[in-house]
Length: 200
Image 1 (tube, helix red, strand yellow):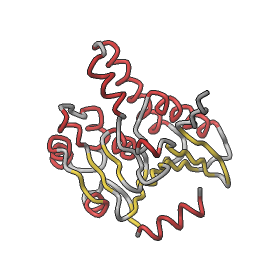
Image 2: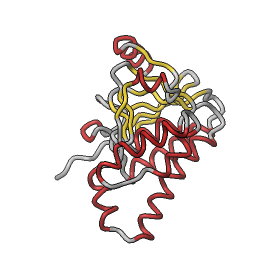
Image 3: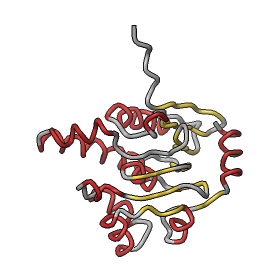
């Protein structure tokens, strides 16, 4: 008998804050179809709750989100164009939903925010990061061009720097990300952990 799988996303509301936690720490919170669907559901719940004044999106474990998981990448490589288009639309709906939520959506990033995980953070209204956090779009290194996130990234940084990040797959530190306007604030790892322990 197999044990029940934990939910891919945790959702809780307290003191006017909706907390959405990516809950696949053993997979570095890699995005799956189930996680994307759960994220959209959690965002809708937060948006409909009039007591909620802000949403915080964070990752369980060491990382925020490492992007698509291996199973999703294998699925992409074997799927038809129509199926891949449907998956792309689902991810686009998630990014658009973040923009349409009536209240601020804040990404609290520690560890790695890479590929689709970086896109998820960048789609949020505010990004707060620990000093050891890393950001980047390394998809190009395995033959993917993250074109969908270009428009989102372009809201925050110059077109030339956005193009460079996407086409080189460069991974940057939170300090570098702050310097180019990609994120809002950087906190020491100790301070960030204290905030997390007080808030989650």
